[in-house]
Image (cartoon, rainbow over all chains, first blue to last red; front, side):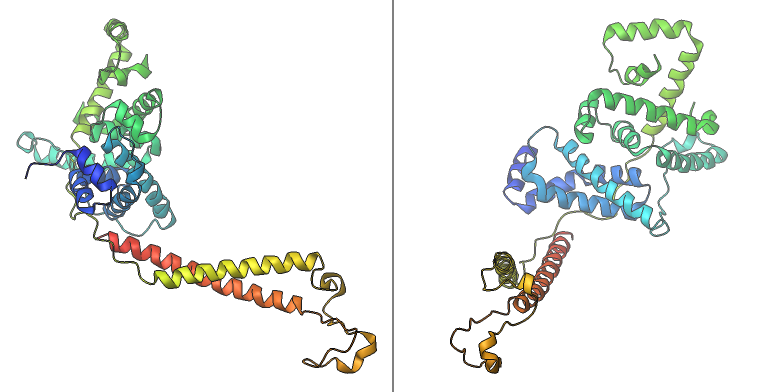
Length: 187
Length: 169
């Protein structure tokens, strides 16, 4: 079957067609899940946030008025992450994350020591992201991990282009300062 | 200058601004290092992989909502009870039910001439005005409103949860 255009899937989902909505879910679940995973730094909480986001998206799809559907989904996912962050703060010892952040380097060119450093660096990035203010974290993740352009980020965060620029800039600078001791590996 | 370095890396600056930055960093070691380290940070973040979730987040069919009739009836009953209670309160406050109970307290007022027929169900003697036990009715109705309202809220909450569970596969 010819792949259905996104606009048509959205239109049918608005009329309550769950199958069409689920095809949108399949299309975007990886990106939404990764946004939640990097925002929360915790795999079980990220799964909950992703599920909540798609549930809210289905209930609210009638309110989608065009623009980037991906950015619209990310906005809902960011709200779901905010709820999960509140829950995590309330019970910080539950649902421990076991999913390491494995940076993608060419394994053949890495010595065993470098590989150990790579794993350490991955964990340090997780900590550095967690230490960022949520607004900056969201902007940096959307830009540098998810690859959105500034306009989409503005739509996904409900802020102006100027604010987006400044959050990305400050977020990147703080991450770099946090990772200062690993500078030799990535500089 | 430093605030423009990220947009510069992302190619988000107009060409005049771009040229200004390029000519500045040629002569400024500190800004050049700042730019390099930011660029390295961005490249590092590009190495953070998109992992595949271990499950699908597709939504399951919504189960038919159970007991909608019960829920509707409960809601209507609560509304009716609230309306009647409000009417009683307002009526009581404006002395619509004979002597104002608010000022005169609980007493089932009995006319002094007919003290001997104060029993419940006894025939009203001439000249006696039947006094509605408004306060008691108000208290009883308040209880009914609390029970009905509570039941409605519990049912609504359960339905909502049930609906969410049914959608989340």
